[in-house]
Structure formats: C-alpha cells, structure tokens
Amino acid sequence: MPKGLNENVAGQENTERSKKKEEKEEHFYSCFHIREDKRNILYTDKMEFHVMELPKLPRELKEDSSAIELWGKFISAERKEDFEMVVGKNIYIDNAYRHLQFISQDEEKRMEYEAREKAIRDYNQGMFEAEQRGVNKGLEQGRAEGRTEGLRIFIIDQVEDNIPKEKTIEKLKKRFALSQVQAEQAYKEYANQ
Image: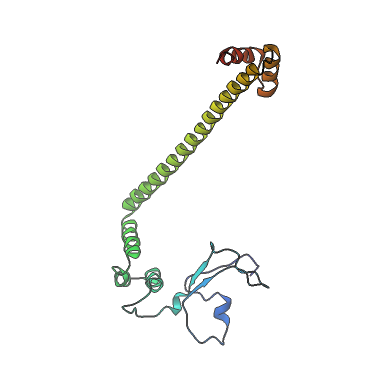
C-alpha cells in the first residue's frame, strides 16, 4: 500500500501491529499518533487515529466495560438484541441508537428525517453566512467612520497650524484620494470645529 493511503475496514486486521506474531495480547482498540521518525516528536495533539479491530472485541460485556468496548459492541451489533445490550449504559450510545431506529424505519420516515437534517444544516449555514455578512458590514462601517474621523482630525490640525486652505485641500486629495469637490466639502464641514 503506498504511503499516505490507509484502508481500514471493520472486521479486517489491517495494521502493522496486527501482523506481528510475537504480540500475545489481543487488544481490539488502538490509538495512533503521528510522530517524527528519528526524534519521536509528536506532530500534533489535535490528530489521532482510533482503530477498532472488531474480531478481537470481547464476546461478553462486563459491568465495568469501558466506553470504547460499548461503542465497539454497538458498531458491530447485527441484531436488535445486540443493540439493546449496550443501550442504557452510555448516554451517547442511547442517542445514537434512537437516531438509528428512527432513520431505519420505512423509507418515507427516513426521507422526512433526512429532509429535517438538511433543513437544520441549511438553517445553521444561513445563520453562519448572515453572521459573516454582519461582521463584514460592521467592519465596513468601522472603516468609514475611522476615515471620516481621520479627515476631521487632519483638517482641524491643518487649520490649527495655519496651513492655507488650498494647501490643505491638495493634501486631502493626495492623502485621502478625494476629488476636488469632496476635499472642499470636507474642509468646509470640519475647518470651523
């Protein structure tokens, strides 16, 4: 298999670890991290690969079974009894089971469920986009207000320093990219403050 490509199918032993004959313990769950080969430095703590080898999963659950074991049993369940064995032992599995029951009902119910899920995703996306538009509009307004305040302060400083009106208007045109008319209007509005 080429580097960068990994294929894991539930029920298949596909990892390098599972190929080692000397390893006696039967672990069904592994968590892998990306590390630098020579210095053994962890690349990031934000990325992990969780692998469950379902054939190695214990046949019977104990009272103190871990959440990983419960999820493994849930994922590998094929009959209603298998699902019900783990339901009630983990709130997240209970929620997943309710969703699974609902969407596995008749086709019409499944289509309704999918339409509802799509509507929720569309609503969330719409809200996100509206928020982004609001942020962008706020930034535009802030820039416009900042520019206006900058013009006002610049003109007041020029007047206080007794810089002639014509020279101030030329600077306004150059520094603020204003037309002659815009520069004269700005000067008229702020020079007497």
